[in-house]
Length: 159
Image (cartoon, rainbow, N blue to C red):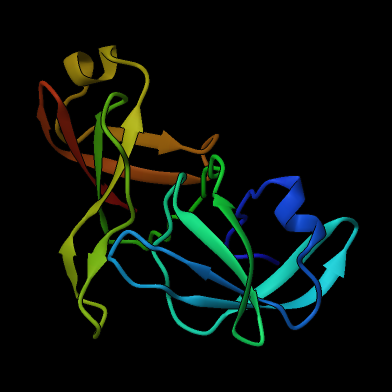
C-alpha cells in the first residue's frame, strides 16, 4: 500500500524506469530522493530514502546515474485519511466543519498533548448539546459523554 501518490506529467512518467531516482523539492527546502522499484499498470512505485514534505506544484526531477532526464511540477495531491484511534477515557473535541480535524497530538511516550478533533456538520449540536448527555459516533460504534459545551466546541469523554 502506498503512503503517498504523486501525479506527474505523462512525458516524465514515460521516461521513468526501474532504478531511476526522483528528487523532489519539498516544502522544507530539502530534496528527498525516491528510488523507482517497480512499474505497475502504467504507474511507478518508488521508495523514499528519507522523509519528505511534498506539496502540489513542487518540482520533481528524474535522474539516472546522476544524469538529468527531465523534470515537471507535481499535480494535485489526493486527500489523505488518517485513522483516528480512540480509547475509553480519551477526550475528543467536536469542532465546526469549517475547521480541520486531526488526531491527538502525543509525546513520544504516548501522553496526550492535545486531544483529537473532528469537524461536525450539524451546527445545531453546538446549540443543543448538554453536559452529561451521551453522544454516539460512527452509527453508534463509538460512544461518549459530553463533559463541556461551548458555541463552537464540545468536549467528549470516550466511553
